[in-house]
Image 1: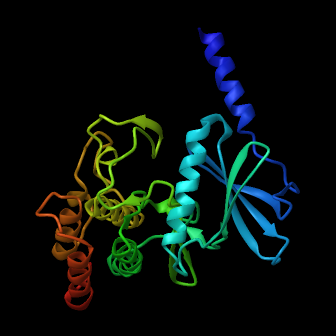
Image 2: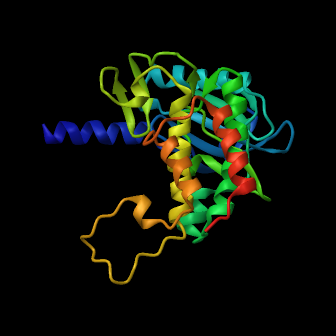
Length: 281
């Protein structure tokens, strides 16, 4: 059985092996390099022969079969429904040699994952609120269009010249839409029937919960453990982070540790009040 499992894994890896630099897709997109790999897609930075501009081309993982293609086609539909200068712009959907591809504009910038873990950036309360404000503007636009993103994590939020951009709409769904029988989650494919939030009908509260975790990632970037705290000592984020009471309350509401926000508009109103009247730590 182990040998069969090994062969299965080897075959999947072989099928999903990235295309080489210099490969031309759809007689138009010249692959420069692979820039991302997800549970069901490979993302390449390419040059568009038609315009000379950089584009991102996402390929459905061949090992995932027809369902991965349907998911990618679905993402293309969502990008077309969400035209925004800080989202990837849909260019085209195409197929070739049995593979499915989505071409979209290439958004340049650094992800917050790169900034925090690669470049050692540190963010205080004021900067965290400023960044969250910009991110929330993008999320409110998404909600107003009737969609939720469902994957608001630090690898999917870019910054360039102080402006925030949002990428990877692979998990996005219409508000209230139930999850399909098989669907992607952050660490692979699952079936409906578990208790996870991602397996339920798409809700605005899911994006707000993600924003709460996003804010904690920013704030923990500047966290330094006390010298006298032992390695086995477990403390909550409320105890570890020296936050103003107002910001702590906001995050607790986002994480549904207090009465949750009724929607992104209420959160925006409180964030505006917070930025105007709070003396940050």
